[in-house]
Amino acid sequence: MRYSTLIASISLLAISGTANAAACQPEFVNGDLSLVIDGIEIETGGRSTRDFQIRVQNAAGPAGMVGAMNTQPCEARIRIARLIASPDPDFPPYLLRAPGNGRIEVLPDPASGGTADSDVVVANAPPGPQGRAVPFQIGVPTEWGLRAGTYVEQLQLMLIDGAGNVADRSTLTITIIIPPAVSLRLVGAVVGGEGGGPAQVDLGSLSSTTETRSQRFGARIFSTAPYAVRFSSVNLGNLLHEHGRGQIPYHLYFDGALVNLEGANGFPYFQHTPKAGDLRPLSIAVPPVVAQAGRYSDRVTVTVTAM
Figure: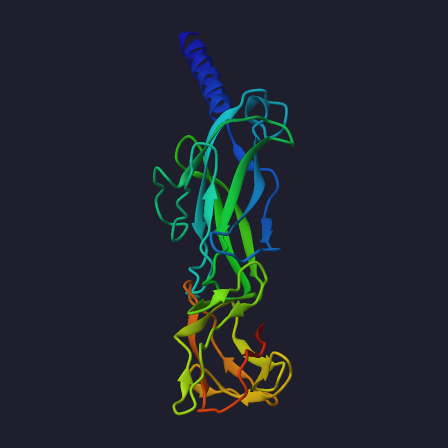
């Protein structure tokens, strides 16, 4: 009888231990997730953010059975790793944040060990189909230097239990859409040009014996895509007298090439620009001229189009 009592006692202890071990089974509620970052504005110092949630529950039930009736919450950690390293050097950088972790380290692969910056602690994963929503935020710098396109990366979310084992896995697909965008600034020896008004280039007094050249100025162009530059002259390449009493022909040079201001022109560039943009030099030359005194001018429109 002593042996019988001893065996029964051991059996009861074993059942109790199994129930305690099964009291915490962290599990993702939503399965695989998708996140799209679009509607981006490209600008100096720009940034686009999106908030999202990852829900975690305790799937353990009473007496070691899986279910939603267990009222004892459990602790877990969310660890994030890349499934496939992105081979595209132009993939937009991004930053993941969560409570208690302002810069989540995305591990290079799921086999990598966790670090202090890679794990997001879920202190209290409750039972039930709703679980606990863990808030996350993704931030994408949207400054110039990005290349237009649709970028997709898959991350593996691993739910780590208290023993350090992977209790569940999920896939987070991140899609970042960078739109075609362009911007143009005239820089150098120009006056104005800000706030939508025209920039002015003052050629000073024209000479009757030598060519008159403008001081150095240029076009700083920003584009997330290949782009084309075109010019349109109101007076078709002529400086018109202020009272319409004559005109003086001139030459406009862009990036070292003569611009045809009397008809169609275009200068294509087949790469997006770096963060600092492309600086394309401009200059104006007026041949020696004898003309009626007065003020002469022309208006030239510079158009940059993403291709």
